[in-house]
View 1 (cartoon, rainbow, N blue to C red):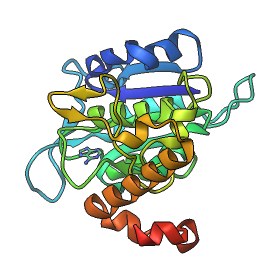
View 2 (tube, rainbow, N blue to C red):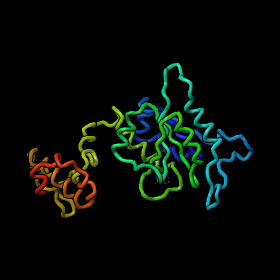
View 3 (cartoon, rainbow, N blue to C red):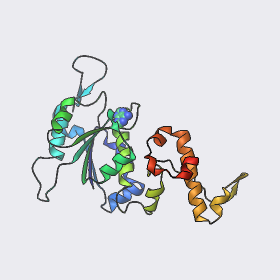
View 4 (cartoon, rainbow, N blue to C red):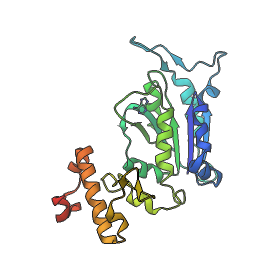
Length: 247
Ligand code: ADE
């Protein structure tokens, strides 16, 4: 997968050299490039923002540098390798909610282009113009406001990269983790069996795989019902068996 990120703070993305994302970059699974938006400015001050039309607080990102950045990173002309235009993702509190389902959808793309806004956001015409020639999605991490899109991109990229084939050592963990089946995962334990007077549940030490699976399913349902009743309400009824309903 190819990923381009445009930001006025490229330094934010230094952690993408670390851990499994760093490994995915090193082995070519993830071809990631971070670009400084100010490369596409032409004035001595390398200006990227201006006051909002209509008044109000804060500053808005000017369209010219963004237009030039998107033209350069997503050119209309087909390249010799037959490239298609990237999917443009703009982190924003007014976007559609980011979710595991969206992470799966994005992990299936061949090229993502993230545009990190700052201040009060990017001039709307940048998004409207981009939408005439490529797929544009504004994405929100949640109902709160960050300083800018950089941290949101780090979060999204981590969720997406771990779904790429070969990135996780044990792909089985993808199937069992929280949100994989619309439920939160059951609690997990490791050695020692007894720690500070707290015991690992007996069933997990029993070796009885049927009982363990049932226990995990029950804990998962209980946790989800307590913490995320919205997720229980969204479960397709046929995904619950008789024993689930009793839980
Ligand atoms: N930029 C500012 N706030 C944001 C949020 N909640 N999600 C994504 N990007 C943002």
